[in-house]
Length: 159
Image (cartoon, rainbow, N blue to C red; front, side, top):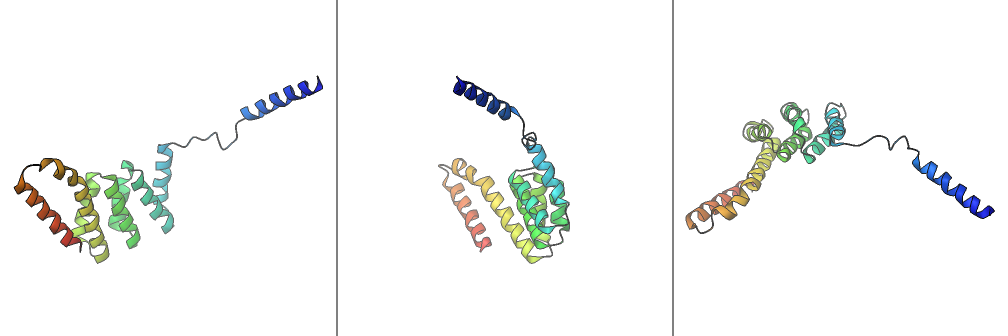
């Protein structure tokens, strides 16, 4: 009898404790909160935090971050900031960011940034049009040769 009462008491006490909310489990992690935190981190003076936030904004394809990343690509203090901003803009795929990366590939004063933006832009174009080459050119030998020539020029350009 005592054992059964002890087991019942133990069962109810565990059930009551399990229902209590932990202070940290009350917060819900949503995409909007994560995105806002990364956007807030872009404004930091800490270079590592700024660069990592820019990278992860590209990973989550945040459309809210296009304008701040474009500003970072234009006005970044270091090459790392500019390069990560260009990479993230390419990953997001917004046309405004893609256009800025293509312009930086042509007109940037810094050679490393210019060459890297060229590579990012060419990789974007390869990815965008590679699937169309497979299906659009089936059976048309002239177009297949043209596409192969374009691919060869891109490969030469990359080297």
